[in-house]
Amino acid sequence: MRRKLLIVSLIAAVLTLGAACSSGGAELPAGPDLMKKSAAAMKTVKSASFAISTEGKPKVQVKKADGRLTAAGDADGSISLDILGNLQEINFVLVGDAVHFKGPTGGYQTMSRAQLAQIYDPSVILEPTKGIARLLETATDPIVEGEEGGAYRVATTFSGEVLGKIIPGVTQGVNGKIWIDKASGRLTKATLPLQDGSVTVSFSDYDAVITITPPPAG
Image (cartoon, rainbow, N blue to C red):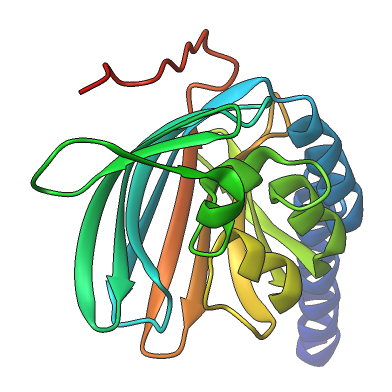
């Protein structure tokens, strides 16, 4: 009798656990479907604020950045770049094909967008065929791990080729985590573990009215 009771108890426990897992899993969307939804949502973004930060000493040129972007490719903000081992903080304004930039001292100088692209062009972040939308489209093996603060947390693998356009210096695939807003499907944050450190990219103020204007002459 005791053996029968034990068996029944074990079966009941297994069934209860199975039901709980099934119920919990049903609440989370499938990873590939969520990534498609998020990629499509990112292609419709009109503007956003972004921040890039690093921890440790990852081998990337961009160490820190903050700014605003428009879907048209205009942007402004500041960026810290590792140039030959020296950290250079630069303020930038991108309007049309003109790039206005200045260091800690002196006034603004100008270069073309093509020249900037050889160093780092932050406007690529919202570019549908190269930026975040493309990164989400090409990500592989996405697994929705849970919910945090109104967003789905997803573990996935990013293409080094695509990721390198957003964060120069990345050349290989990266197993990272992203947070996708449940309501809008838009990306709110991504964490990328790299050799000797990590990079975090976050987004806010989607579709806020942004007007990017050139700095005063002189």
